[in-house]
Every structure is written in structure tokens, then in C-alpha cells.
Amino acid sequence: MSETVLEARDVRRTFRVSAGFMKPKRPLHAVNGVDFSIKRGEVVGLVGESGCGKSTLAKMLLGLLPPTGGELLLEGRPISSLSRLEIAAKVQPIFQDPYSSLNPRKTIATIIALPLVVQGTPEDERRTRVAEIMELVGLPKRLAGNYPSQLSGGQRQRVAIARALINKPSIVVCDEPTSALDVSVQSQILNLLTDLRAEFGLTYLLISHNLAVVEHLADRVAVMYLGRIVEEAATKALYASARHPYSQVLLDSVLTPDPDLGVPDTHLGTAFPNPLDMPTGCAFHPRCPRAMPECATTAPTPLIDEAGRVECHLYGARAHRPASAEPAP
Ligand code: SF4
Image 1 (cartoon, rainbow, N blue to C red):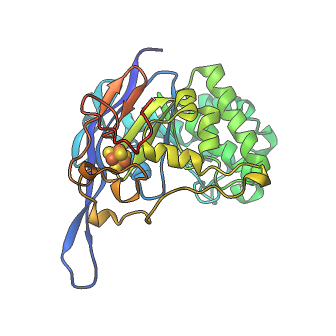
Image 2: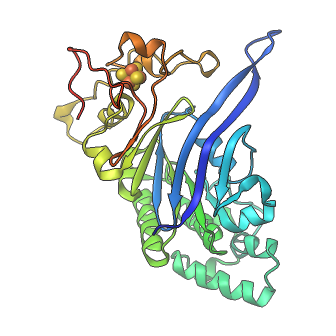
């Protein structure tokens, strides 16, 4: 498991959006200098609040949106140099909502076979492979001629998974793959993704705001805040002792089933900032429980070490730890 499937180098995506009626357009830095990589067979979780840039990054990986800066490499080649067909053969999505991501006018067999049609696979082979993948994802053969409206939510998501996997892509981008499903069905879909990964050595980028889902599936987790990855570490290590204050707050905010523990206090002083008015220095400083004066003026330099990567003044060569702050691990 060493070959890099996907690599992001300082990837940026800026939109020009109106800040109000009759006001000039301003830049919105949805993805603001992201570096990360995914190796073959690895599952990387990407977590963060709504609006942090996760879905914009996913769209760029799927070739649906070009970066405005930096470089995205797919199996060593810049995505910008690949045709839509080449990208579709290597990267496939599983979207959040199986109710809207499947064409209601097409049969299940037609939907699943679509990636093969696009790649020009002969009809006989398509039929065989659709039957095989339906069996693999637990869809009975008798559903092949049905329409999405005749299926349950879990079955529709199995159709989406079958469609994503039928052409053996190099990487599957799972964008909130269970969040539109009933709780009882969520675990079935998660187990299916886990089993398929174990059987075929699949590579997933798992985008979710559900930290329990990410903990279940991912080998490594990247935490995103306002367009940047602020921490990246092995899943176990991050969940045991996150280093970045934002990761710590995210993990503290997870509800537990124990009623005695009540609703967690997330310690976030202010609301999620307006991305059009990006804070200076460390973008997290207006909400950070451990902010120091320099955090408002100076952006932290990333520290890359054996534990992963963290972007915070509390770590690294220039680490600054005021007396009131807990010592960094
Ligand atoms: Fe908090 Fe400062 Fe670290 Fe940003 S750099 S996360 S404000 S301590």
C-alpha cells in the first residue's frame, strides 16, 4: 500500500461572489491551499463543518470543477490534463442522497451499467458485470428491471455503490454516503463499504461531518476548516488525542448515548465566520479556546512529523505555549 493514487498540492478554488445587492463581487476562498495524498487501498476521512470546503474539494477531485490554483494529481498525472472520460474511469462518486442521485426514468440495470456504456463496453459484457456487481452489493437480481422509486433508501444507495464500483475505479469519493439514510440502514451501508474495501482493496475518500462514520471506516483523517486542512493524523491517534484545538472541539461535540453526560459544551465562542470576511492570522482564532495574541496576526506554519500534520502555533519549532495553556502533547 504505497502507491499514491491522489495528491493535492496547494490546491485552491476561489469563487467571485456578490456580497450584497449592488455591491461588487468579492473573492471567496472555498479551498485555500490544501495539501494531502491518498495511497492505494487507503481510506482517508475528510471532516469539518458545513461550508469548510469539503464538497468543493470533492467536485475538483471528480473533475467537475477546475482548481484556480495548485495541482491535483491522479495516479501521478495532473487531473487538468485528463479528459472527462479518463477521470470518470478512475474516480467515481457516491453521493449523499440516493433519492436524487439516481435517474428516476432509468431501470436499475441501466443506471448501474452507465459507466460501462460511457467506456464503450460491449452489451454482453455489461449484462454479465451488472449481474455480478448487483450480487456483490446485495441487490436481488429481480430488481434489475425496477425503477429507483420502487426501491428503499438502502437499496438505492446500494445501486449508487454498484454504479460507482462497476468499472473498478482507482478511487471512490464518498460524499456523506449515509447521512440521508435511516439509522438502521446506515450501518448496513457502512458495513457494505467496509466489506467491499476488504475484498477488493478499494481506495476511498470519505467526506463526512459524522465523526462516528469516519472513525468506523477511515485509516487516516484530515480535518478541514475554512478551506484548509488544519490537522491530519491516523484515525486512532486523532480520536485519542487530537492536537489542533478545532479538532479537539469537533471531537468534544460528538453526542454520546449516555444521558448523564448531557449535551457537550463545544467551547466555540462565535458562529462559523463568513468566508467572505476571512479572519486574519489563523482563521480559527475568533473561535479558538486557546488563541494567543499572535494568532490574530500570523498564520501558523504547518508542522509535519511522525504523528501527521498540524497547523497551529502551539506546535512546531516556533511553538508558543502561554502559561495558561495546557502543554502540547
Ligand atoms: Fe488556536 Fe492559535 Fe492554534 Fe489557531 S494558531 S488553532 S488560534 S492556538
